[in-house]
Length: 372
Image (cartoon, rainbow, N blue to C red):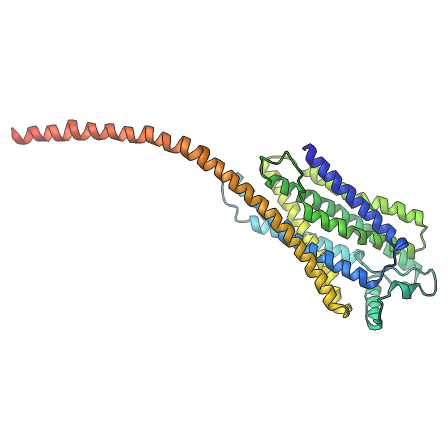
């Protein structure tokens, strides 16, 4: 592993750690409203959809194509394998949500005063109907606030679900960086600043505070002391580098095996991203009838940023491909090898052959036979 790659991954991990810690501290520092939470979630979900469909999944297809070129034959089942890994990632996150119901991004209701519930759902205008729907949805996932036992169960489920989710996010970050590093132009790979995996990094860094707010919010509801909340948040933040390390521990073996491992990791990560994004977006259609234009605009903005990052990456790869084509075909292969060797060998031999056959045998013998 090169020094530049280590420094880039370290910088990414440090920023994600700080983002997670900041998210855990926000409930004590900033007044969070339902509208602000929903706008942020819509924006990040749009980015997550774009990164999953425009970055992670296409890179998985490219890695699968590299396996076919290494093996020397077409891989007809390659696309199917990629899609199976994609479905596996989606189902893993789906069942985590179904059995642990950890992915609940809403303003936590902390019983600190008679107006706490009202403050936590302050929309700056009246949305009583939507509040009731939101509370009903939360209760169905075990987020009710009537029983202390329910708080403990919710806290345990959030801890398990968020831990697995964060480790998978670390794998996704490392796989994205590695895929772009391998696709970078070889001439410039060792110099300059390379922001490989930028889209995946931004999604994780922006989404991480909401995960931390979920964990810390549920702990506050359960009357855990602030110091314990911060310690848990720090430990929870370390799951991202654990995922990065786990990915590179598995990135070994022959070239085809490494490409297969990377392709599977990218496709699996794409499935998890799509599931997370949809689990945040789809409840809006049923439980949030307010701010439809603003929420839709936030979604499209996030999707547009992901598309822009994808196009920037594609233009870099296209430039590398053109440079590679110019070097190989005009500079070396065609001029120096193919044409020179063909001219020196093939045409000379054919000239000698034609002179020998037609001059020595056919014409002389035929002429002597006819005249005698």
